[in-house]
Length: 412
Ligand SMILES: Cc1cc2nc3c(=O)[nH]c(=O)nc-3n(C[C@H](O)[C@H](O)[C@H](O)COP(=O)(O)OP(=O)(O)OC[C@H]3O[C@@H](n4cnc5c(N)ncnc54)[C@H](O)[C@@H]3O)c2cc1C
Image 1 (cartoon, rainbow, N blue to C red):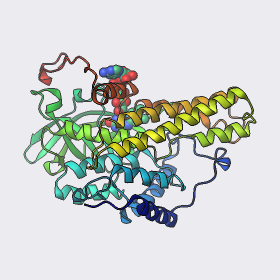
Image 2 (image 1 turned 60 degrees about the horizontal axis):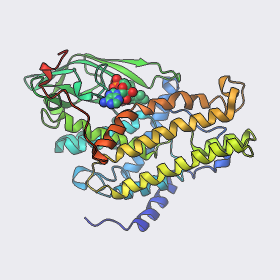
Image 3 (image 1 turned 135 degrees about the vertical axis):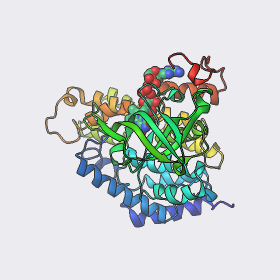
């Protein structure tokens, strides 16, 4: 399919965005009342209102044909290149996009993609479309207490029973589970093959009998993620995503989308360079040589991340699935997020330790305490470095000691 000329397309995008969003505020006016929280810390009714604002924008985006830009057209996407997606993100950054949440990102950028790529035509029609439009919201039921970095070691079991599957196990760190309609779940369906080969993916209705969601309180105050317990949950075979045993491919594809989503950063998470600059100005620190060095360093890191996002986007092939280079942008984004909070804290000194009613100061604790979460979510920094070493730089792989069938591995 021929691709629209990027410059003409950019103009179209800009015109459309201007019909649905207000222009972004200047950096000078940002900061004092900017949303600095990496994870929201809101009462349930306010979180729901926030979700509704995000959903209104996502629906408008879907209806205008700007959702799932890189997904092939025969899978329900716009069939454009990663470079077009980068253009959209650049144009979007000039507008006040409603503050998004983990659940919106997981629904649109991870679960919808997985169902579009691995689902049947019926599943694409019934679920992927609804996820892309955020008519239905979906969480990601991957991690378990004993399976995070080593996700393929997961122990949640699914046993076939007639035309249904019965699921038992526990998931953890499930972002947005308390507001989700469905969860994309990985379960072990065959313990007698190597661990990656015995996993199957399912869409689980979160209101099915036997699903229990328990919020986890974070150090930043909010409870944006949860434990999810599954006891004898019956899921029809029609909600299996991909073939039995194809779950690992579903998982790795979804995780690559997660790295791209975290790294490409067109969803505001916490404070930005502009907010730190606004803070330095309000504290009268922009003439201080030490503060200037910190600001320059942060600016360079932010610019490098942006340039790397664009470079990775331009070099990645069209076709819908991000490559291992997504780890580069994910790593740079999580380091930048942490560094942003550290520079804000350096500038404020002791002021960050107590709320003295000064606008835009103590609020930075919401950034500082939330940022480390993104060094873990979607694969930790160390795992990104392993992926970059092995798959981008082609260095020798880590030694593997788990080639036996899952049921014969120690502890099983
Ligand atoms: C904010 C947030 C949101 C999340 N949302 C979700 C969600 O919606 N759904 C979901 O399923 N999960 C979610 N997670 C879970 C996330 O995917 C895991 O936390 C992550 O994969 C790490 O797993 P773990 O916490 O079990 O740490 P572990 O895997 O136990 O790792 C502990 C430490 O060991 C290091 N380590 C482990 N293996 C290696 C290795 N081979 N080489 C080098 N170092 C290694 C790690 O880097 C880490 O520092 C979320 C996590 C966070 C923080």
